[in-house]
Length: 189
Image 1 (cartoon, rainbow, N blue to C red):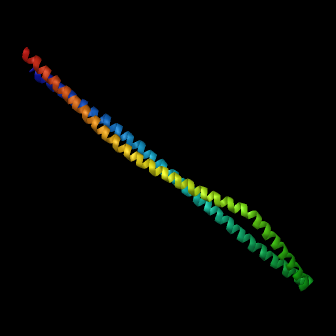
Image 2 (image 1 turned 30 degrees about the vertical axis):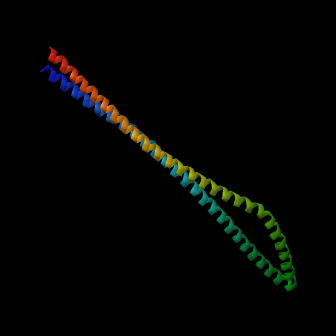
Image 3 (image 1 turned 60 degrees about the vertical axis):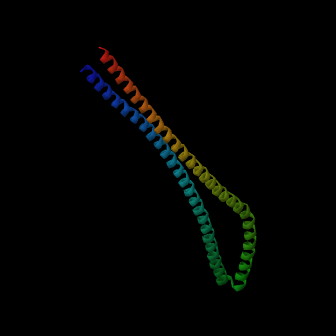
């Protein structure tokens, strides 16, 4: 009778130990999955940030272009109004002189703007290329990281599964040996 009670207690404890082993390895696996999920989320957020930065940069460039066009239209309108006023007050000859003067100023302004805009355009081009290159490189790094992470995850999951099985098997063998030892001693009494 004492043998059955002792054996039942051992089985009860061993089932608890086996559940503890399951819980331990499952928590390791879940922890690993959480780390991988957070890494993936960080990678996605980084790519999204770079995409938004590129969009903002493109929008800023577009706004600068629009602003320049609106400024040119405003200057043209002002000149036409001033020219019309000069012609009304001083005659058509004065209007022609004002128009010729404006044409010379436009030519000089255009040349200066061209000389000043070349370095700015080159800087913008280099900056855009740099942003594209950073995005492309970062995307490649992330893809490689994801591939490595998947390979590592598979290997670790296999290891966890094997370790869990080996540990459970060891506990079961220990349980079996303990039962056999108890039976051996109980038969000798």
